[in-house]
View (cartoon, protein in one colour):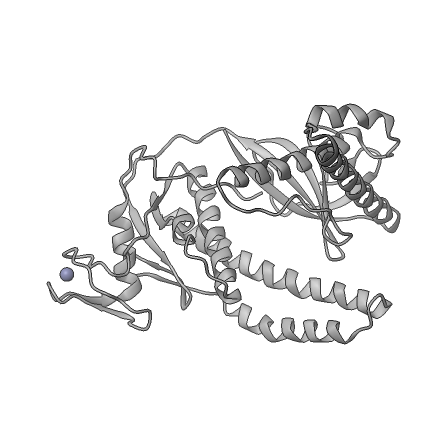
Length: 368
Ligand SMILES: [Zn+2]
C-alpha cells in the first residue's frame, strides 16, 4: 500500500474561521504544555514521558476540541522527540524540540474520524460545522486522515489516502535525469526541461514585500497586514514552482517506464549555505517526490543512483576528467566525444541504475 495526499482549498465562514483559529491556538497551547511537561520530567527527575501517559491526561483537560485532534497533537510531539533522539543517536547535534510560536503552528489533524466529505464537495468537521470546499480533482483510494491547514489568510484541507500498489509494468523505456540550475532537468535523450520563468518575476515582489515589512512598526496593525501580504507572495512563488514541478513530473512519468535520478541525500552531504542553492535543492527533491508517486501510480519505477563523478565521467568510454562548473561542454580527451555537460551526466545517471534490490537505493519518501 502507498499513501497519497490530496489538498483542496476550503472557504470557512467568519464564524468558522474564528473557531479554526481558536483550535489552532488550543493545539499549540497543548503542544507547548506537553512539551514543557516532558522537559520538566526529564530535567527534574530524569524520566521520560511517553505518548500513552500524556494521552491518558487528555480526558481531564477541558479543551473543547475533537479528542482525536488533541491526540494527534501528542503524536506530533512524539514525532519531534523521535526525530530528535534519532539524530542524537546518529551523532548529530539537533536542537531540542521547540516551543511553537503563534505563527508557526499552522495545522491540526483528524487522524481517523470526525470528518466527512459530503455530496457536492462540502467538508463536514466534527464540532466545527460544514465548510465549503473546492475539489478540483477526485480523491482516489481510501481516505485515512484529514489535516486542516492555514497558509496566510487561506485555509486548506489535506486528505491522506491509501492506495493499493499498482501492478508493475514492463520496463520498455528508461531515462536518466540530471537536475540543474540553468535547466530544471536535462534528460539522457537530450531533452531539456526549463526552470519556471515565473519565479524571476516574483523575485522583486518578494524583496519589496520584505522591505515593506521591515519598515512597519512592531506589533502594529499595519505590520500584521504586511505579514499577510508577504505570506501571500510566498504562497504564489510556492504554487508557481509546484505547478511547474507537477507538469515536469507528469511528462516524465507519462513518457518513461523507468526514471533515474541522482540520490540527492548523498549529494547534499556536502553542506551548502547559499539560499538560492537551497531553494533549488528543495525543488529537486520535490521533482523526485512528484515523479516517484506519479510513476509508481502508473506501475513505473524511479531509481536513485550515487551521484559521484556523474559530471566528470565520459558517458561513452568511462574515463574521468576534472570538470569545473563553468565548463558547459564535455570533451573527452580519450575517445573524443563531445556533448553538453548535463546531457553527459544524465546518460551516466541512466547507465548507473541497476534494477535490483540494492541496499544503496533508498526509496523516496512521499510528500506529506
Ligand atoms: Zn570518452
